[in-house]
Amino acid sequence: MRKKAILITGAAGEIGQALIEQLSASGEYILLTLDLHPLPEALDGRSVHMIGDILDQKLFARLVTEYELDTIFHLAALLSTRSEFSPELAHQVNVNGTLNLMQLAAAQSQQRGKPVRFIFPSSIAVYGMPDLKTKARDFYVREWDWNYPTTMYGCNKLYCEQLGSYYSHNYQQLAETTPTMLDFRSIRFPGLISAFTVPSGGTSDYGPEMLHAAAQGVPYSCFVRQDSTIPFMAMPDAITSLLQLWETPRSELSRTVYNVTSFSLSAAEFKAEVEKRFPQAEVSFDPDLQRQGIVDSWPAGLNDKQARRDWGWQPAYDVARAFDDYLVPNIQERYR
Image (tube, rainbow, N blue to C red):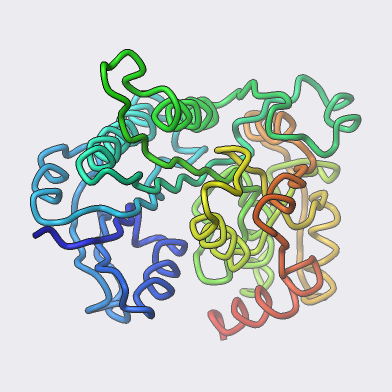
């Protein structure tokens, strides 16, 4: 008899590590984790970890001979900035890798006669505002507004959302028997700010880069204009939202894709928050035209009323708490 398990891809990232800690605490499920890198030693024994690639279909074929997958948290992806430099690789990883997993989940759903829950983090990169005037007018965008991404990463995420909806509602619609569909659920995240992960050059990383530079006492040149505004969220809220959506009964969900957000700040406002905590911070502005154009195409805020209404979403970290209780103490400790 196959053992019931939860699969987490991209498990070595901060969201993956936090999910391992949360889900392993109950002892209810076997956790299977996959990444190109090993997990930190602190997580030894919490999961069955595999060093591997989400494009390796043979790896997944071996997995399902031993395990029955109850849930897939698909976190692995090639992020926005790198995707612009390697669009073909981004498509392979972000689309083909996701399609591999959806096909696996759909087959597992039919074999066990019960939907596999497929949890998929998406992004504000799926939006494409045509100009700054429209961005200012339509400040809080809804899930169905302005879905015209301008980056490969955004295109990949939007297409995978559509694939998830297809596999949840229309897969094998011409089959003679009604198949058991997978249960796809997606969250569109704003810019995520982590106290424990060093920014890696993502398009929304100018905010956390300011903080890390200030904590180290080094100058920072911000790559967007002072008036550039996007929504942000502290990493603990991101993890909470994923787990809340995962736990909500399907009957209570009116959508497959949900916005979540916490607070919106301009780059100048972010600088001001940094300077409140680090008065000696040196932040200047030298916009990079390419990345500036991407940030300008993203909305200034997200309308997350559907998530609040359907599954009780409520961020725990506003601006003050995000900086004072989570970001600043932990980043200071990192460089102490």
